Image (cartoon, rainbow, N blue to C red; front, side, top):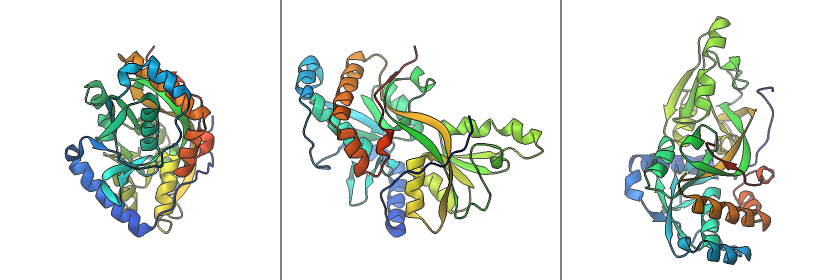
Length: 311
């Protein structure tokens, strides 16, 4: 399969000034995440009608009704999950709306605990969170730590400086000698690192990887010239380009389709099955597509849920 493909993805517009303020706030939150433990969503999105099947699901899974469940998130991905720039006490984004909609369907309320991306699954495994909805790719490797319920497919985008002066074309030898800013724990990290042998065989230096804890820091690294590229979900890349249209460009979107999923403990089959059924209800009612449209995400990326487990 070719490693390059042009792929457009809509994103909600924002001004460079407001986005810079947003990113600064996100950086501060990364330093004080513990202080925000348990922040609830409050009155965020307009309440959508709960599908009729949800009443049946609440009867089928009564152990979740009236409970408060914790969702671990890395709130630095505008469009998916981020701190509300107008209210630092709440989170907004598609994944937040999805968690709330699942809670309404199954009868539970949602609290959020913000952690570094690499700490999402360890937080779940330790019991400090009941599930994870945070733009996390559902891979077989990650399924060793949690069960996943997929809800969307996505391609990677390649963020570069305006005009792509380094001529980066994807996760290939165009990265030789380049520096990529990536989140610790991202699936893109080994893909970039694995180019080392091919680069050396071509007489070129291996690519370098700078590791950060969140998307905002990766984007800032490219803006500051510390990194040549940032490779991540194409929607996140599009958000960055729209925030800084005079400074950033999307070179390509890599043809490596990933599946974004909800992570649940491997030992909690009841929660996994309840979430799967509720997600199917939300998709059948059109609510997932509506939420993706609201946040400027590709509605065509909605896909029927699939379980990804270690077995």
